[in-house]
Length: 246
Image 1 (tube, rainbow, N blue to C red):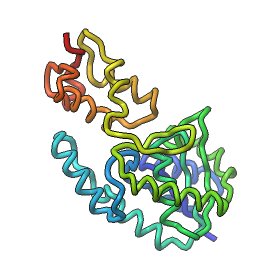
Image 2 (image 1 turned 90 degrees about the vertical axis):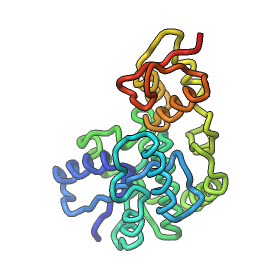
Image 3 (image 1 turned 60 degrees about the horizontal axis):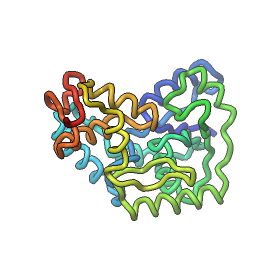
């Protein structure tokens, strides 16, 4: 039976394809998830809702286009149609990758699948692994048992019902969090003196293993509400600085 490796990001897919080409399983396929379900609306199962949310957000920021499949419609169609042995890769310490895993588990329902679960330490996410590290984990794939599949489906359904702004990793697993979840840490990372926005956010990214865009959004919101002062457009993250109010 052929193998379909289902991975949580485009970057992880590229690295895994390199790993597979250098190994024995050169015929295996890789399917990359194009979204980040650790934030934004998830109540609707319609990928068009996610795409509309991304389009609205990025239009506000002036950042680049989201691409053809942000929202995941093509990904979900490919997963539904797969008759391969499915191997799902994810990092349990990454909110984005944990949300991806739960969503995939719900979509697959009763269909059996294997998992390669990356734990922290040593690394928080599959996306942090290079091709050699991914290759060394190919043989660690194991069946996801029914109890794990059922509990994952249940947790994702609860998260969808809550439909919070953020999903974050806790000791009890992935949990909903409000829009202000990272604000206190961002304010603590700021100072009375000017600092580049990307530096304030960079510290937070490494501490929380979270993507940059949601943190840039929160910085812009803190500027709008007067909790931070910016010397330019807060979305011009490489050109603008922020500080605490005097």
